[in-house]
Structures are given as C-alpha cells and as structure tokens.
Amino acid sequence: MVPEVYLWGNAGLLIGVLLKKKAIGFIDGNNFYHNAKKQNILFSKVDFSKIMKFICEERNLEYTGFYYYNSVPKLDEDKEAYYNQMAYFDKVRKMDNNLGVITKKLRYKSAKDTLNDYSKQQQKIEESKLCEKCKKNMQQPCFDCIIKKRKREKGVDVAIAIDVVQNALDDKYDICILFSGDSDFVPALELIIKRGKEAISSFIRCKGYSWELLQKMDCIPINNTEFENFIIKQ
Image 1: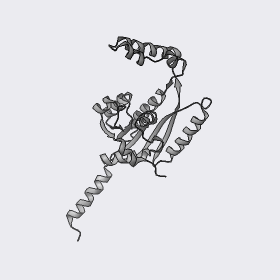
Image 2: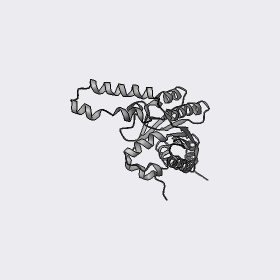
Image 3: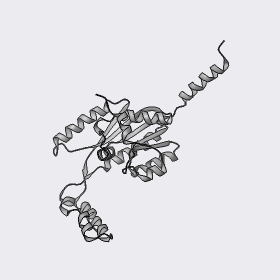
Image 4: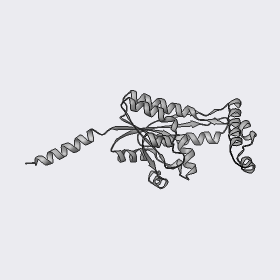
C-alpha cells in the first residue's frame, strides 16, 4: 500500500506544475543591441530563449515563448547591413519557442525636428556652469547633427507596447517579461498590471537600464558575465 503522505506529496507537485503562471517574453532588439555593444557582449550570438528560460526558472514560471522586435535598415542605403540583418532575424526565428520576429523600417527625423533638438542641446550647454573649454568640447558640430540623417526607432517601441497590452487583453499570458531597459514601456506595464496581469523587467545591469523600471517593476538585472550562459554554442 502506498503511504498517504507520498500520495499527497505527488499531488502537491502536480498541482504546483499545473498552477505555474504562463510567461511570454518581449525582446527589444534595438535597445539590447546598443547597450550590449557598450558592455562588449556578443549580442549577435545571444540566445534569447535561454534568457527567457533563466528568468522563468528564477520565478518558477512556465516558459511559453518570446517575441523579438527590431528595426530594418533600408535596402537601397546599405545592402550589406540589410542582408546581414535578415540573416540574423532568421537565426532568431530558429531559437526555442520564438513566437515571431516583428520588424519596422528605420525612420528619420525631419531637418526641423533635428534642428530643434540641436538648439535645445546647445542651450543646455550654455546654461551649464562649465568653463568655456569644457563647453566647447561638449558642443556637437551642427553639420553632424543636421546634415546627417538621424535614425528613429520609435516604431519598434510602439509595436512592443501594443503587443504587450493586446496579449494581456487576449489572456495569452499571466506574466509579461520585458527585456529592455527603456522607461518608455512603464505606462504599458502599469496598464497590464491594472488588468490583473504581472510584469517582470529584465536587462543588462548597466547605465542603460532605466531607473524608473528598476523602481517600479519586479526586476531581474543580468550581469555581463552571466551572458556567457546565454551564448549560442557553435
């Protein structure tokens, strides 16, 4: 005869497995790319499914997959960069439980918007209490700011925010895992929390990780050295 305690123990384990909360990851590829470069992380070899599984294990969650978002350079401006990006997206699609690669074309600020940004920057420098030599070192040549095109990647941010909210409304997950250090996503995360969902913020432990995210959300910062565990093995 099987001891009653043993039966109850197995039942408890089964209930624990069944009650695991479903988690979906939303990867901000643009944000990760820029910050990973600063931290000397091999961003092109990072397996995002491994990161999601690591986070799910930390919080005892059921890993159901991740969406990846990034911008695409224009083919007619840089063919090599475009095809390299397409090849990278194919690699991401093959990662475990990838739910989709969502892309947006890079947009550019108008000359008027760029000039306004430049003027504001110059005004802040003039209002600072720096010496003239330091002010000069901080000032960016107008040519660099205005003549050169300024890339905008806000289309990606909007797509992530919409999908985070839409998936919550469709009851696709219990917990959203946002892999980004961008504070622009705080309102979307606060909204899904009001709708009864939970949110986890995770990113590289670096200056690019928003203080607002760290203060307002359940956060799992990942150290640079830990990324060795997430590298795709050839």
